[in-house]
Amino acid sequence: MSTHAGPLFEPFTLGSLNLPSRLVMAPMTRNFSPNGVPTEKVVEYYRRRAAAGVGLVISEGTTVGHCAANGYPHVPRFHGEDALAGWKKVVDAVHAAGGRFAPQLWHVGNVRRLGTEPDGTVPGYGPMEKRKDDKVIVHGMTREDIQDVVNAFAQAARDAKAIGCDAVELHGAHGYLIDQFFWEGTNQRTDEYGGSMDNRGRFAVEIIRAVREAVGPDYPIIFRFSQWKQQDYTARLAPTPELLEQFLTPLSEAGVDIFHCSQRRYWEPEFEGSDLNLAGWTRKITGKPCITVGSVGLDSEFLEYMVKTDKVAGTAANIDDLLQRLQDREFDLVAVGRALIVDPEWPAKLREGRFDEVLPFSREALKDLV
Image (cartoon, rainbow, N blue to C red; front, side, top):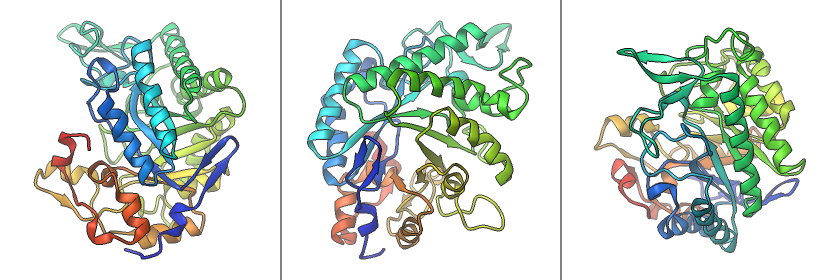
């Protein structure tokens, strides 16, 4: 690991967003918010990362105000006075520690199962209806449903700005609702929301435009996307640079300020013939600032530790390569996930050269908030 991590701790400015470092806390679902309300322990969890040197804290996925947005127990929501009051405490704590904060706004779509809180009778919502034993387990969304979800994202963004958040991130990755519209594997609609890549991107474009209208022209909108899906780790939304440009251009023009480009391993080239990763290609195509993410600071990607329960990820991998790419402006910001789950002091240890004190990651780290 390099003894000079300086580039990660340079400030970054985009309009009203002023970050004290290039480090971003990646959004990671933790399931520690009973009834969808962040607790004091959640407040301290985020505060500690900002205090250690994370410039932008992006929350775990927070559900928008729609009946089918949630898919998991004890995940936080970004609607309702009690939840928003909890997030206001998080925002204030992160600011007091010197960091900036953005909630990740989320709708899980057809991942939701019957029996899931808050109303177990509500099925998943998705681009296409799905039945099992003559029971609707995924409700195929009507145009009215689509507008309801668009409005829910816009309201969540409006609320985020009102409680002092510095930006919002829209979760368009990993096989959740927005991504389900992108992906041909889950979207065979025959109306204006299905078929061509432009049509499959229409839902996301409408959300981005509605969020932009809700927050105004100068408020930062981050959009997270991925090629891979939970349902298919080999899936590719855009298998060529030309198709990636066709995919990204409408999103960029709709109002995205920063793209958060999710890879399982950030160091892997996105296309043959170039060393650029997904963030590098996205920056090249759109000209917009980009966040890279994917096993930063570790020697294995996340699927390995989920399959091998005794897997311990090393902590000294690829930092030199990361710093060089950052200095070469392949991307602008670096999101860190598992390394920050297990070690809230990871940024400070990196900055101060205390590499032997960095804690290794294992699945056990998911059992508590530290």
